[in-house]
Image 1 (cartoon, rainbow, N blue to C red):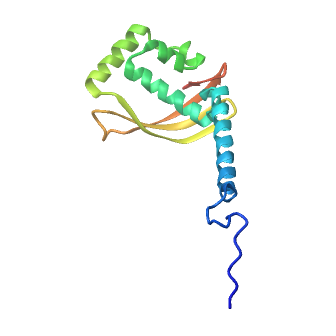
Image 2 (spheres, rainbow, N blue to C red):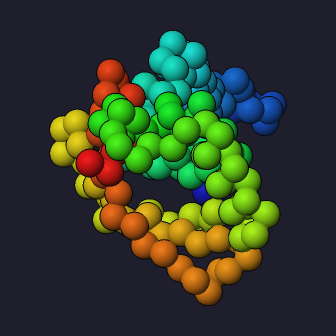
Image 3 (cartoon, rainbow, N blue to C red):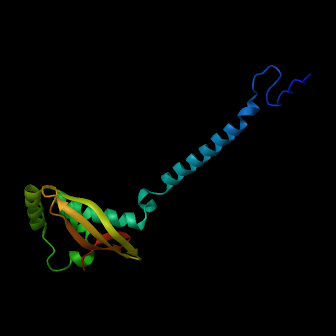
Length: 160
């Protein structure tokens, strides 16, 4: 006759599992909890701007430049341009900027940026190709080679 199997040390003779059987799951849950808490603390300590890569910061600078035009927000437009452009010949006055961009919005709709390609960051300079079109003329696509520079820790669009 076959001998009955001996009970596992984790299962008492009455057949109910012991808490020891759940130990691997308890350990795994503890490890996951520690990792999640670590990520949350890291995010709370470091602001989002510091967690972004330079590529992402350059994309945000380009986006802010076009958003300023969409909103006819002269102060934001000034803040998104590098010093060489702001002080250079041909930089618009507040009145001209607001008038031109409001008129453009009324006639063409907002500027849409479906993609930014060929993004390359080299120290404090970056270049990218910005693909954009007006909302009311999606078939008329534009591609602009754009230079972005870091000034005082902030990325600024700079055509010079």
